[in-house]
Image 1 (cartoon, rainbow, N blue to C red):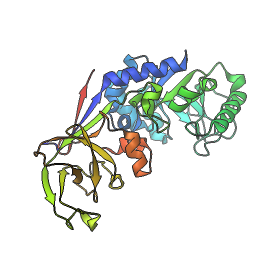
Image 2 (cartoon, rainbow, N blue to C red):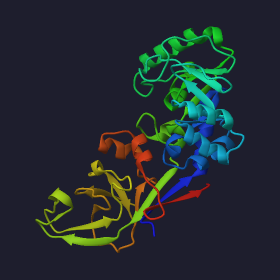
Image 3 (spheres, rainbow, N blue to C red):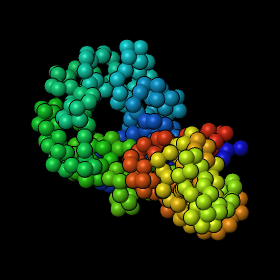
Image 4 (cartoon, one colour):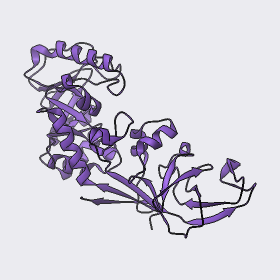
Length: 339
């Protein structure tokens, strides 16, 4: 039996897609569902996004795209990462679209040329003459969540370089770009994190009318009282100063509840409670204000427990937290609902 449950709300995904579409004001929404839909389930999220009006799907690898193609026969799917020669052949057969960031442009497969306008990673330094198979021109924002001036400079550079090829589909915006930069809309935007209701700015997603789509629940597996001077967990990082009730939750860093989340808050029976001591591979402890029965519900994410807040405690971004959660029949069962 699984020791926790992940609940993915496809209704929330659809509402987020519509919010992004409103922000894009006529440009297409391309749903980024790489890394198994940021841990939410790529096939389910892709179907919901397309149902809400997304015009295409974006993934990082050809194998990710092929898995989607088996379930979504007619969907437009763009592979954003590099592909080997064998994968190019597979993409051609599966009617996928590829991104070319260096090297030759392959024949008989739809291609998007990627320009480096400031990301300093994948990307062409100059735009070659598009071949007949080139259908799009793209780039990638480096800091749309934090640096407006540099983002606008990237937009201007991309617009200038691609102006004579404006008949091709042009796209540069991510979720942050779609929500904050009208000049970045062009023809389409590749939106990932916003689709899942997580703020690209690390703030309250409700500020941008986004709704978290993922909930993570477990329960108290053990409740015990520590006496003054007693500790819980490896390294004795939490030592009780007075008689203190603690609850043990059967989830740990092997499930994606990271070791650096000590000090964050979860909800126990709907009330905020602090995570204390060292988070171990299969369990962590919460400080309680009273004795509670085993089986008391614990919310690790969602319903008042924000991924953005966890990320601030861990010194990371909510993207990493979401994609790090692992579902499996033995540990964390994933359930799909539709609100």
